[in-house]
Image (cartoon, rainbow over the protein chains, first blue to last red):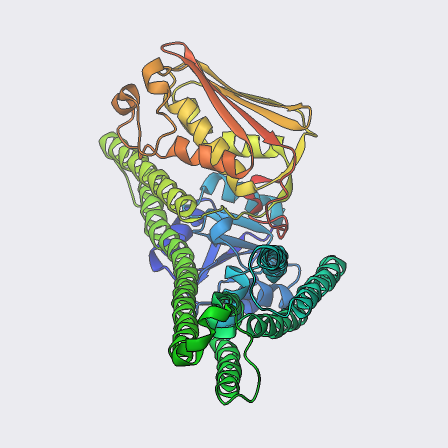
Length: 123
Length: 460
């Protein structure tokens, strides 16, 4: 029995709205949070099959990677996908050793590939 | 002071060299003094203490010989700067003493040899701080003035250079002495102040360099920020388009869907252009493009990049065929490889008519990898072929076929290939098609090896 629930954490309300609509359309159950703290709290009660995490949260200047590490520490089995607007690694010079994410996706998201990849993980 | 030493080390980077030069000069001086003494001894009848003088010349010779031998011995040992400076000081002091004695015994102020002190002041000024230079000048002046006074009061004998002018030596000695002393002071002042100016300029350059480095950082952050800021809204825009297209927002007419598809296509073009401009800005701003290297299977990169344009190819019924051995790997930059393939493949599809084939081949060629991207498209006129790698250049046909475009794609590809120490060439026949050949080294030592398998959407 696959867990078709997905938690999306992104600070852009429009992105949250479109991702939610498009993934619900694909048959997933969606919850969303616009900040990391709320997102982590939600994992507890919502128990998602996959977490989609935006890489940059401008107000905090933490690059989402920290969030991924925090989630992975608490829930090592939970797949975390990074959604990033950054499409090149040269502008991506973060502490690469610490990256805990399972998959990376660029914005704008290729939903066909996203859905395929999610299904691979929650199978 | 810190800046001074930096300048010294850059301006006169090799104190070793200066010392070598100094030794060579002294050999010439040695020869010169010896020859002039010989000439004076043989042809002029100056009343000079020749034995004493030849002894001093011999001393100078021995001193320089020992300095030279020492210099040869230490040359390979990489002495510290301070040790070299001490060696230099010893040489200067011995020169002063010998030159002083030599000139004293050959008429002192009568002898223009006195002015040779200026050369020593110059050399010391180049190497040492102005304080040390003035200490040298000061002690030299004290010595000169005391010997002058001692001669004047007959406390020590005067050795005349020319006995006939001996009579009025004491009348003019103070004028000559004043001339020499002021020459030395002015020389020291001029050279130290010129040196100070050079140092100031050096400091300015260093300051500019620091500023440049911080600007460089601002630039990188700017690129990061811009990418995020622009791609975010476009992502939302595309999401909304897709919601309407999929009927999530309710029934749509055929016309609405077609309109939206057009809007979507232009949005994608916009995104491509923004990415190109960011890539271009990045590559242009970097003196040397920094990139991370990682071991990659070329086939994965090629397939991932073909995947990106599969929709565009299907729309035009274009086949994209790749031929690359599964185990062909190279150590290279994923970013740069993606830039190369995505640009070439998307161009090939864009400028090919329907029902044609785009081929992407890669094979090992000795220690290099040969990549070929070939299309059966519109081709490029021979007079335009030279210009296609130029920034912002688009051929006439290209502009007719695809409206949106920055003309940066191929210029970025060329920069990426060059950054990887590769070569790119193009063959094209109008109406028949275009082929790009790229030769890349199998591994690139220039990159920074810091990547994990990351950004890994291209490799699964």
